[in-house]
Length: 425
RNA sequence: AGAGGAGUGGCAGAGUGGUCGAUUGCGGCGGUCUUGAAAACCGUUGUACCGCGAGGUACCGGGGGUUCGAAUCCCUCCUCCUCUGCCA
Image (cartoon, rainbow, N blue to C red):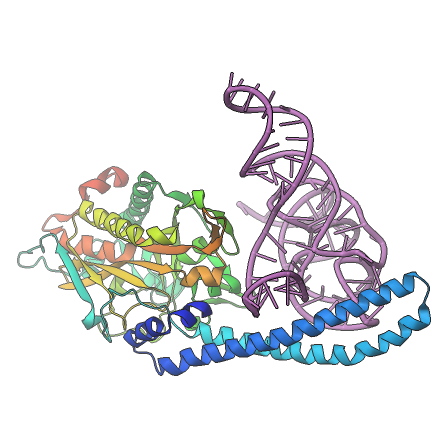
């Protein structure tokens, strides 16, 4: 969430940023934040003063008791009753103000970076570049992946529906092996870039959900564990970033680079439309995620580095892709700047999002209380970033669709050592 | 899952109702000494909020309670350890 002091000191910047996101009545909301915060401070001033008085009296009573002046002590005790009641009142008011403040702040999205284009929807995203040649498929070789997977019997949706539900496919044979190869390839590549591999829990508690911003606003997107107060992760970002919740790091430890493979679970309530077929949208899918924690001065360099790293993966997989800079209206709630990478899937003649690389600046760090001790010994919020590197299903879809030949589907060269075969046929 | 034990500052570990935000040791940082280092010695060393400042308030796993006063007593939840049971 945003820091109140940031809003106070940069009111116009904050307002401009929120306007870019097209949220309702941004000025009123920001003013309300400041007003509630002022209220909170005033209450604290009064409460702390009374508390100090009360502490002094207690101390006095202690000394009187020690020196045996019981009656005198009893006399003073009477004075404390009024103070106590007052403190209790102020305490209640303080808690109310603080709660109102955090709830309000939870509802305010991150301020977009100044380079983020304004816009309302995906159509307003800025296409930064397009890389690679779109495949030209010959007649009869333009099948979408949902037909190809049947043809080669490598992914079974009906079977998954039987044991779980729609959107939970079963990968079989070379389909399953392709999944495993991709995960291993992506992890190995990240290792070469200096990331530490981690295997986090795929269930997280409420505090973690709040830490990275999935709660409270996106509650409907996560699967909940009945009676356990745990959530299935929608992305490895949640557990991996939350490893650093309530931590104060040393400046020299930065940047921290972690990579993790996890399955991801998304309810996708109300997100199923006509063109959501096959692997395009699933309730469960596999993803390798890269997460970095950086010094605020370096986070945008890191964002470029991460984007370039993901581009490199797509280059090596020989998939044509384009890079988008998301507009204010399409960007995630917690992000300050997001690049989406989309691969071209020839069988559907569509671009499919396979990665989202974001800088959250201090938005998550503030919620997480993730700080570091700087060179001047001051404790300041770190910046958090993450990116998919990569999400599997749509990569699989694009590989199947773009690389289909009459003889079968030719696997990308870099995967062959991981796969142990060259063709799905 | 049952029985028992324990959670205190970066770590170790005192503290069982009153000048305790907390003795001490280690580690860290600064300094003295040294050609340099080690050792020794001296000093310093948590977080958050409020206040122009002096300073104040809160925090001893989380939450609640008793009391004029709680690290210390009570309730509750969480976590860890040991034993028993169960199980990849």
